[in-house]
Length: 328
Ligand code: AHN
Ligand code: ZN
Image (cartoon, rainbow, N blue to C red; front, side):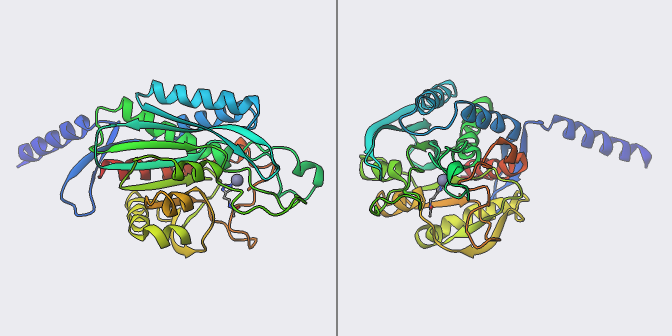
């Protein structure tokens, strides 16, 4: 009967029109519930990366660093986060002292179940992966190394505030300062232990009674044709979270980016969050071992600039995190 098919078709059309553009319905791991998850806007995230880079290098003890920190604090305020700013001084391998800030923005500050999402917001004072001695001494833009993770996190804060759908849990965005002032190979000063990740080392040792169920660190999440492998320290301390994040990415269609490969351990902010703060944290960090070095070939070079930021990589990371948050 033709009429019956017309009614079915009409119902189908009505239902598909009702579906919001803003969200996508997805079932959780056990397929027990259906949740609406907002879309991650990679253009907007890219804009936050461009603004950070626009301040100039965010090297501790420079004007660009102070201005960018103030800007990030204002953004978290604008997107309705409760702020906790940790100010401290740090001495680097070159015996210089710097005023630093770890910046935390909280959503649902009273929720007991919490996820900690982190990234570093400073940028490296050197380009020590350059061959040329002069270029090595010029600070990098750090569009990928620093600004990309922060851009994704700010965009997640904006998306949650602008969405009618709210997560069931608390989210804490934590922007570490002074991650990237580690001693370069060209330094002829005596070798310093643990000269990297100074902000996260300070935070982990001075976090008070703060805790979260687990954490995800973003580091260099905007590279062209980037892949994210399962990094050794993350597996060692938080293998269940690694599996959860990589499964969430695969279910969102990003298994070609979040690859199913276990790779070496690296030193990054998550090491100290795991070992000192005792919060299980995984690192989403670009893996490109084509030249025998773990990191991409723009890493700590002058090519770590906006031109080498890829919105489709930002989208894969941002959407995976939104899915992770809304499925909790
Ligand atoms: C190493 O250089 C081995 N780890 C530093 C991690 C890092 C630097 N991430 C971004 N910049
Ligand atoms: Zn770096």
